[in-house]
Amino acid sequence: MPFQHPEEVGYGYVIERYAARKDSGHARYLVLKSGRFLRPEWSHGERFARQLIDDAATITDAELEALLGYEWRSRLTAAWLIGVDRRDRFRERVGDLLLASEVCFSGSAYCFALARFGTHADAEILTAYLDRYLPRIDLRYDQPAALGALPHLRDHPAYTPPSFTAGRTSDATSPTA
Image 1 (cartoon, rainbow, N blue to C red):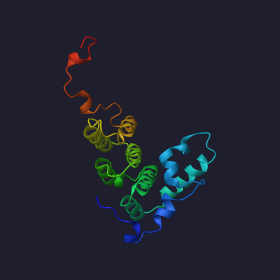
Image 2 (image 1 turned 120 degrees about the vertical axis):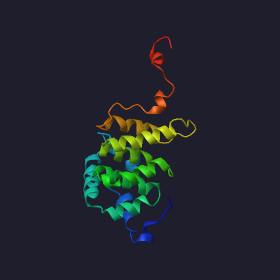
Image 3 (image 1 turned 90 degrees about the horizontal axis):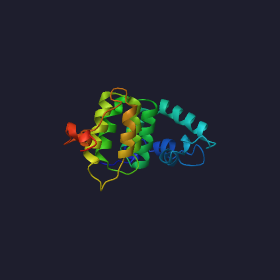
Image 4 (image 1 turned 180 degrees about the horizontal axis):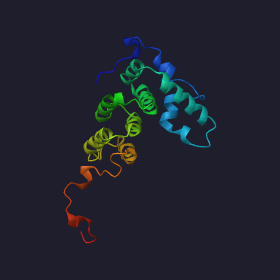
């Protein structure tokens, strides 16, 4: 997927407005990447979450597309906003980005969005990702995030990717196998 600066499509402001926004003295993308807002002891957590929720409700689909078409900071932020607002119309786009794994750091945000959608289709995307990347021990991408997202999907709470069961027989689960 080609990268395109949001300015090229008339949305140059979205990086500063959504990704680089400093809700708590730190750029939003850095706070999302670090997970610091999830820590109860972080004094800015509630305000950060409220501003993220507000932006998720007000950002337009075109603005989200502009963010998704650029680099990792923008994509990470867009995926979080999509997930927070549960904009499942972005399922295919988010899934394509996850499977492509073109940029660092944004994959966990794609997994978050898919987990928030919570359907069989999302489980299929996550398992396709795991089937592709789990066997690649040389590529430590976002497998933990994808594995962590699966239990949150209501249609497949206990799904085991085929790569975990390939070649197993019923004897493989016995203590002597």
